[in-house]
Image (cartoon, rainbow, N blue to C red):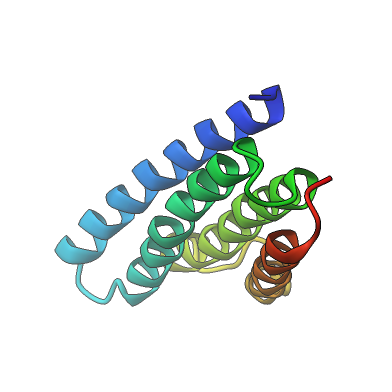
Length: 122
């Protein structure tokens, strides 16, 4: 397993932990709908990163595209969730269009994963 793969799995673990923290905060705070959405984004994409790296490492799908997709999941979910959390707590976003940029990158990452699944491995 490459160093990039190990890094992505470590980041996915941090994403999962942050997702659980945000879910707990959303459950205990009034009007925390943004936190629930951010939590879902992180908790959904953290296992997707791990699964993507696992199938790429076993040469089931095209490895380079899969690692790119996993990196896209990490970056995009962080942009999306980070923007929502800042809007909840600080009253402003990460930067203009951060959440839509994250959402677009998520779509592109899922499409890259689809291409990685059908691309010849060798």
